[in-house]
Length: 299
Image (cartoon, rainbow, N blue to C red):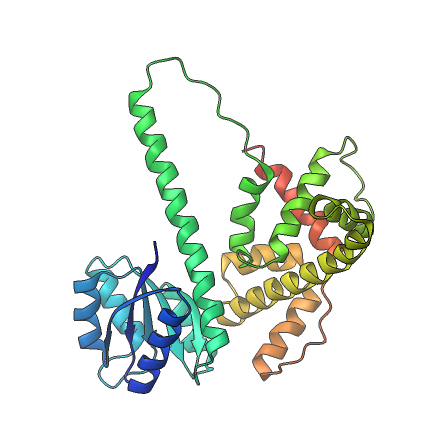
């Protein structure tokens, strides 16, 4: 079922462009648009959309203020902020108000589609988890037989919360991480991490059968992992710039990445540099992910 959207932005051309992108790409359906905060509040409370695209700066009240007022009135929509502001303080305030992602102005179709597909995926995952929780609660009330021990979580199930905290849900490399974790958990020797090339090759054989295709897939896996880790590093660095004391930043940044790399990435973001000199340490990331996954599966 497609998601429902409302768009609140004082720029009429931006509203039209966003609506076209959402509907033409099949991401969802736009229930309505509004040109200011007050009108936007009435629209959102009436339509109760799944996702609200909210402009940060509007003439009557800013987007952050509008989101807080909506939430105080029981609104449960997810929010995506639209802005051309680069102020880290404003970005921090926006994330603390509960937004999912930022879309920068001027609006870029590829960026909008990418961001909204990630929001869509996150929404679907949360909905799926809520449905599971609801089903389990109903079963709990109906159960007459003696309790049966809970089934052990799979590697992919245990991996999901970690990837979500790193902002990697939806990244193509996340599938490779899950496959590699399954390979590591299947080994009898749980000590030393095998060479990365060996892990890539074993993962590739689960996707391909032809030797030539396997060789190509090995290289593709490394590229996907490197891109995903770069995204994760950028996510954490942005979080650190917004709020250095954020628990997610404090825990994941030094654990999964070399902190010098984190600091360098933070500096690049702060200076607005597009090209990056930061090199991610895939081996460290995989080792830490494996160790944490083992702990998660004990829960």
